[in-house]
Amino acid sequence: EPEVTQTPSHQVTQMGQEVILRCVPISNHLYFYWYRQILGQKVEFLVSFYNNEISEKSEIFDDQFSVERPDGSNFTLKIRSTKLEDSAMYFCASTSQGERTEAFFGQGTRLTVV
Amino acid sequence: AQSVTQLDSHVSVSEGTPVLLRCNYSSSYSPSLFWYVQHPNKGLQLLLKYTSAATLVKGINGFEAEFKKSETSFHLTKPSAHMSDAAEYFCVVGLGQGNLIFGKGTKLSVKP
Image (tube, each protein chain N blue to C red):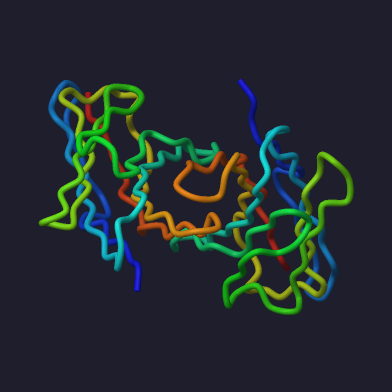
């Protein structure tokens, strides 16, 4: 069964450092997303990406964040200068269509900023 | 504004007894609704979805949910709990462009 894969599963970084979280969406999907879940809190939408550009982003997704699809398979989330409050589980997801279709999620990357 | 409320943060049932996880939503138009499950150290897995077809939706692992517009509810049920059902369950409202609004989650515990 096709699945979304994320690497690494756990990343520890020092405050102020840049991190890149990587995702390989399902191959025939066209819409890609990042979500995050701070420990003990809700899963929150960060950004959606379609046709090589951001289609929607939340207030959380500020200038410190960026996304990229550098090739035909990877989808990355970059945090330019990490803060302690960026510590969270980050989930990548993809869908075949944007509207009314379920998102397929990866297993997540746990980011710990120290 | 769209929102989703899961009424119970923790539900505990005995194996073999029914499961009811409650969810209410707020949406200004006919929403897409989903239930996802998250097992420890695993990703989010889709259990079932409602997208304006049948109001009673059947999902995987014996779960089902009924969309009740008059009550703005989408409760998740299962007739008989299994130990493997112990996990966290999220009720989700789908907006356009893949923006999903998650509930806070309900942790389901199943006692032998």
